[in-house]
Image 1 (tube, rainbow, N blue to C red):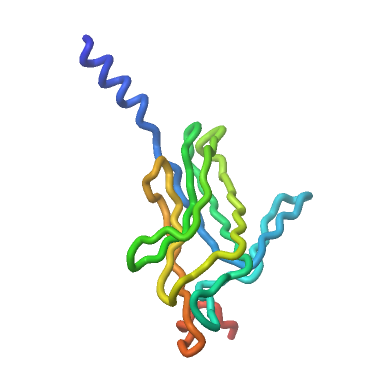
Image 2: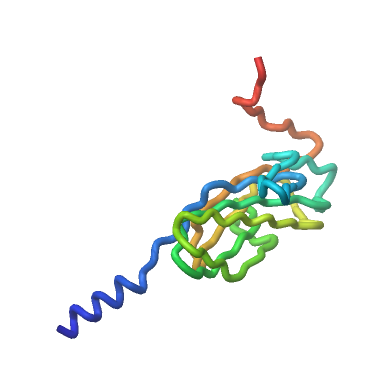
Length: 154
């Protein structure tokens, strides 16, 4: 009997990890207070720097999560891909009232410093485990912006 109670306690303690619906990087985020709709302004995947180190004056990260069951320790951080060097992060508790709730995070970073060109990542962490990521590039003036597709209007 004791073994069954321990198994039940272990199962009850393990709750589902929230699901990341989106991670977007942009210039600004506007929320219409009447409709609660969110507009992401100036979405981007690449930052062009004139020289290095380079400081980006202001960028927003929008994260949407669902399937949460109660309270979690969450964090969002910027990391340089080649060596996992953290550049900046913010974290704290996030509580879901029910699993159908969509929790939206609007985070603003000012004066984020990039030491060199390369690939960087925005990571979403739940209980210190990565549950989502978004890659982006920082390039110098001599480099070409990588091509995009799927946004052309014909």
